[in-house]
Length: 412
Image (cartoon, rainbow, N blue to C red; front, side, top):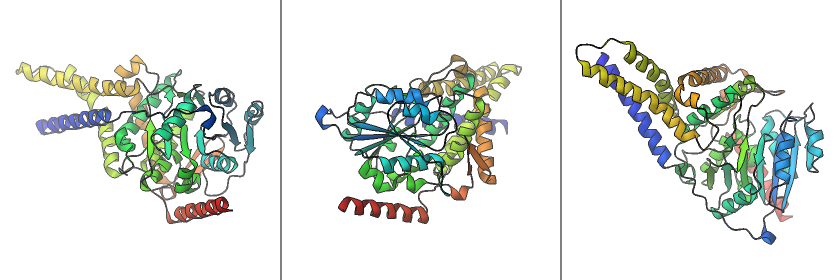
């Protein structure tokens, strides 16, 4: 019996590592930046949805206003902040729209993005978060790449900064997302409908592409509107392009307290699970089992007394040590260009991963129980029936109505 269990464990480890190697090898960025002439820059509308962002909005707008890109507008859409978010935003001379009347059936961020879209004049629409900071050349590069690859949606995963201990937990969550999302090359292949991902911290659409998928109106009920929009692109065989491992855009998602991290990922995990195919969820589960078994097996190998077959003990110790450190090495390889790392977390990875597993389990519990999920001053249902799985018939009709309305406006 022990031999059978050990064999299953070894097969599990090898399957996880081989899968990681495959998706890592086939995850190349492949920049194709089109050179843009200064007088022919497409007009870009930068839309920033906000709610209680007084600690972030100033730094974000400072970076956006200093972008090396002359043909742009910046629109801040506030959902009714009670702090100084709006006051700070207006000091930068950008367009500020305040709309705190969140309609039924909308998630706050998607509604803010939709309001921003209605006010936008650009041929290209950039939706970005208030906690993001943009390098001077980021917009010119992003627009050039979007046009260069003929993408309808181009998304950048920002480099994640970390100062407090719990901010380093973010990397492990995105590592699991990487496992679930599949190879980047498949994500960027419009004909592979099973692989899709995008980051709501930086999503650039052509207006044509945004209208074709129905925009944020089509994902109004989704807790993870970025992944839902990426999925819509794939379903319609539009070109989605995703790039990470770059410092063009940086962010600190939860600089204030651990509770923000906990609530934020509780929301994203359940929403994300509802967009994944079962076999991708299965590989995430395999990696979570790996998390539990690897440290237990290593400790048992160290503390158990060697039996009379000396080489069995030694080989077992080597195998279990390899399995343990291979997990941390895979995480290091993935995260080293995507966020700030910490030596402690690479070596003693079971400790932060166990904390993340708690978040995952709570997220699943909240989703299955249909409990409400809160963010800032807003509360949303986590009822799995209300989350996007492709597009519901109601959302399809809404998206088609929006498209007809926009087409009519263009003709008149």
